Length: 630
Image (cartoon, rainbow, N blue to C red):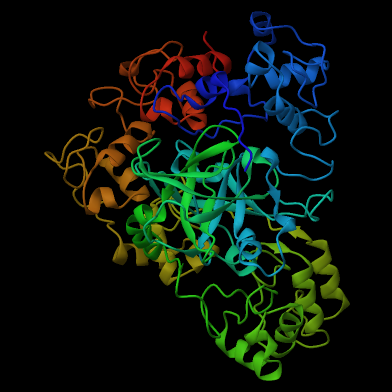
């Protein structure tokens, strides 16, 4: 892998390397996010745009000849205007300037990944890396590229870095799969499939991972990764699949270069594969077994970085995934028979043999053993649609295979049941015919977002009928809906309220122990379960039951500091966004957070360092760029 120059200004301004060697954020190096945009007036300090040389190629001098392109690149890497427009600057121009047509590191025009990395469309069909690329998606924040995720457990759990979601709410995030090129060279972007994030299941700042739940069943369409929690060793061959710089999916091959590095978190492994904004959360696979061995989490832009070993993550994440109802695949336990989890839907083609419905799988393989010996291809999926009980009725009208989108797969199911009373009878008239086809085509595209969710503010008291689906206590709501889905699909009626009375605490609300004197300040780690503010305690434990079941630790206190349900700015003794004790947002204050809640949350959503560690000069500069100082 060619070595890329590390620019001092980029390192200091964008990755805060001066704080802890290197630390990665989800700030966009090449997408002109307002939080980091530098005023054009600042260019007077390091050279004027335009300059004399070509923007799309190294020109040996500062600046380049297209003013708009020059200013956009230098706003994010001052080195290009202060010192020299080198290959790094030309690569940046190739990504963000309209007149380069694939210049710099992109090469050849058309669809190409960032940082000069390999297009996943070039991977051999049926290979382990090609199959693993299917499991990798892009995390979107309010519709904009943010980080990388991957399917860690079926049916709908994905993993990314904790710093990608800190300070955010589930409803701000979504995940799109298949954002990649459709050809090895040139080509165009593939059609994508997007799922909403419905829940932030778990986060761990010390290990920098987060587990998210998506709508629908993405694993049935895109499969899931296999986990390798074994220890690392130097020299191990690896590859990473990522959305560096928020661009199309790419693959990068390399090796583990050092162990036990205390950089962004403790005991990371140094790797020669790429780090970049947007690549945070990327899975890193062992080449020898195609299993996930760690998660990329930090490093300088388009240069070698660091990953958190799965051997560190899995003892914590594994039980959390199991508690959330996820089914994982561990290395050495690859699917070997019909019905194994993770083999994929019988009604969708996959690059591996077998499918997840044992009865259907055996019926198809008894007719064509290729489907169980080599690959579950399109013919196997078509045969399943003809001879098996097809799943019917997903997240919206016309979504016959539960993948949260009305597409060709649903059309295939409908046509396979033509002139019968089977799956596809959308108007319920006893026969699948042209009228149903018209209904399906009218619904073509992604399903609408789900209406509400458990724990959503305003969804109503769990202990009383409220006339709408869901209720406002997430834990109670989940318990009731597991036993009676009607309560979350249609209406929280008298029966649901009665179930809540049996399963939840309806005597006075909340968790027994929350609000009791002597349990400790909610804004500080106490070492025991619960805290002394009833409302705050209930809110935090609804998000993380560990705080009431085991211990109110620092993570619980940090959640309280950021929660609108908790008062950590008055007499609580703690600090948080908006606390008068937290100091000014517009100058370094020597501690995490600042005293303007909206400004603090905006800055920390982009750079968690400002709320996790210290509100330093870079945080203050970000506040000055994005917040109202009046």
